[in-house]
Length: 152
Image (cartoon, rainbow, N blue to C red; front, side):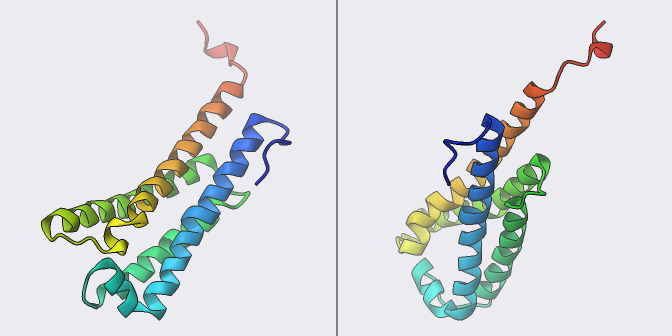
C-alpha cells in the first residue's frame, strides 16, 4: 500500500479508501462470517454468551458487510457508494458497540470478544471509511473549476 509515488493526492486517497474498505472492513467481516459459521460455540464463548441461533444471523449480517466492503474496494465504486457502505457498516457495528459496552457494565462481561479489540474495530472500520470517502468528495469538489454561469 505504497502511496508515496501516487501521481496526485486524489490517487493516494483512492488507494487508502480501497485498502481500508477491502482489507479492514471486507476482510474483517469475511473472517467473522467464517468464524461464526464454522466455530459458533467458540465465538459465543469468546463474546461471553451461550450458543444461540444469533451466531448464524451475525454471520450473514457480516456477509452483507463483506460484500458491500469488497464493492467499495473496487475501482468502479464511487465516493457516494463508499460513504453509504461506511454508513451502513456504522449502523450495524456501532450498534454492536453499544451492546458490548452495555454488557461490559451491566453484566460485568469482560470476555475478549466483548470488550477487547472488537470495540476498536467496530468503531474505527466504518468511521475511517466514511472519513476517507468524505475527504475524497471534498477533494474532488475543490478540484472542479468554478462554473461561471452560476456566479451573478
